[in-house]
Each structure stands twice: as structure tokens, then as C-alpha cells.
Image 1: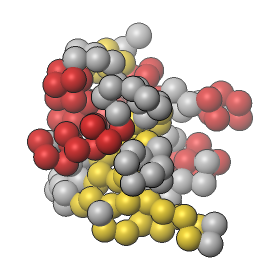
Image 2: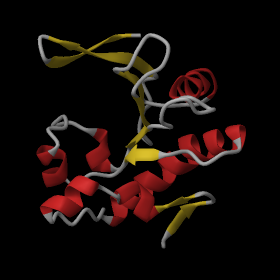
Image 3: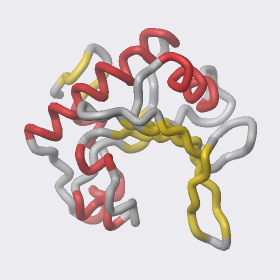
Length: 153
């Protein structure tokens, strides 16, 4: 296991059931690992320390062909090692909403997205951090006519 921060390994950020199923080797370059370390230090660790419980990452780094296989955005920050999706599951404390609110109020970030779910709790949250410039963009993903659209939160 390659530790990239106190509570997070590189393997956790690169794990993908889809990659395994499709035989895709999901390994970041040294530059992408550097971005993942910054993301861990600036976003993951402050959350982990604040809530004092494990934080479940459902998707972290994605090599380009993995991102294409899951029909991710062609400009996805996951491919640069700058984004992670977090899903704490249902009926947990902290909830996805708790994490979303904490990030929104306390952390520096590029994008924070309330991904689907209900008005009370997102299905998961997407958060990204850029070492270049953070826009602090807050969005909500919704389905319209079977397609994903993003609206300002």
C-alpha cells in the first residue's frame, strides 16, 4: 500500500470495479500522483479529521480509457488526479449532505457537485481541487430527458 496522506492510500484513490472488469490498468503518472496528494491534503484529510470517521471514496483517479468506459466527461478532473467522488451510503453519520456542507463552508475547492439524490441528501458528492486556480464552483447534477445537466446550487 502506498500512503499518500495520513488516512488515504493511492490504491483507494485508484480502485475501480469497472477497470478490473474491463482489464484496464488504472495507474496514474507521477504528476497525477502529485495532484492526488494535494487533493488528499487539502480536501480529504480536513474532512477525515473533522468528522473522525473513515470517508468512503467511490471514485478517484481515472485513466482516460476508464473514464471513457464509464462515459465520464471528456474534461474530467478525475483524469488529472484532481477529483474524487465520495459516498457515505444511506443512513450514515456523517451523511453525504453533511460532507457537502462541510466542504462548502470550510474548504478550498475547485468544484463541489451535489450528485443527484434528493433535496435532503445527494446520492454522492464530487469534489475537485486544482493547484492552479480554484473556482469554488458549486453545482447540482440533475437528469433531464435522460441526460445529466448541471445547474448552479
